[in-house]
Length: 410
Image 1: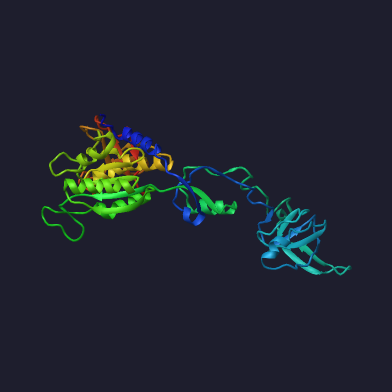
Image 2: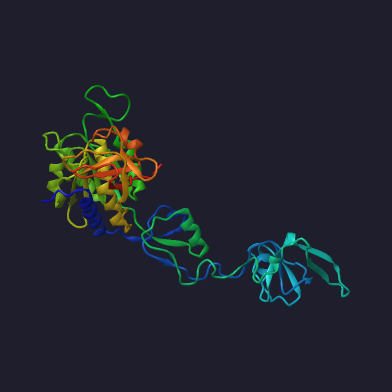
């Protein structure tokens, strides 16, 4: 059985997730924010789908002066009415921003650059260009938004696998779509162990505050999961076994915190092994996060179980290298790659590949944060990413890899 390093763990978790790719369902646009687009969507028609005016003003045909048509339409009808019939040479027609441009139009003259004159000898109202108006107002197609200028019919609107943003939803609405195919969010159950853990107030000696309850549900949601159950379980073998069994029946992913050690008080590792159909790895060749275990419970598809360490920094590191790629695979999302950076200070050799909370200094130069023990959180609050440190350590000025944090950057 292998003990993967951080890079191998990412690959294993992503491949496992992809084997249980989540089903697709069409959802109305307002419900798609933050969801993963299941497959590429294309434009059914051009954007814009008609020639429209970029300004309030006048559609004109030919050089000035022009005979001005009377405006008869109002409200929403005015936008369509302006393009309802061709514009004859030597004529002008009032037009609103977004209004349809009539055939025969040579340009749009904005209203502040035009001047309505009195009637000519034939009793027809005359429109002329103001003396101070720029000559560019008469350039061919000036102030006209041509059909298909933004997107052509059949062109890709959005590639599959992206997390949908407000801009994405607005863009697809402009394209005339009412719904999008999105992946179902993986259902995630959180089981938190530790008889010594309290959920409120100041801990006494021998007690610790719950760090996972406030942090993990939101973190999982931010990674694309749907948290369906959060519960605390005692350090008891029978209770642990029942909780795992109930969770795998309802969830796609079961996350546990603590209990992955080898002492008599650690039951998660043993009880997970009882239910596991496949153990992908029992531990990681990485610190912090070494006790992390990853298994498939209850056959295929069953549920994935990630046993997170009880130390908070170790657990957050495992969230980045196991849980994030697992959910990415299940959602069909691309993985975030490590970035190459310059190390600002010397980092001493370590016994095993280590992910250190690190901050970015001026330029692309990075240094480890202080307070980065497996049980510590201060360094993580100051971090801009995880600096990956090989056993040989790092020299100042050397290139190294940084993993982004599993949540939005500051």
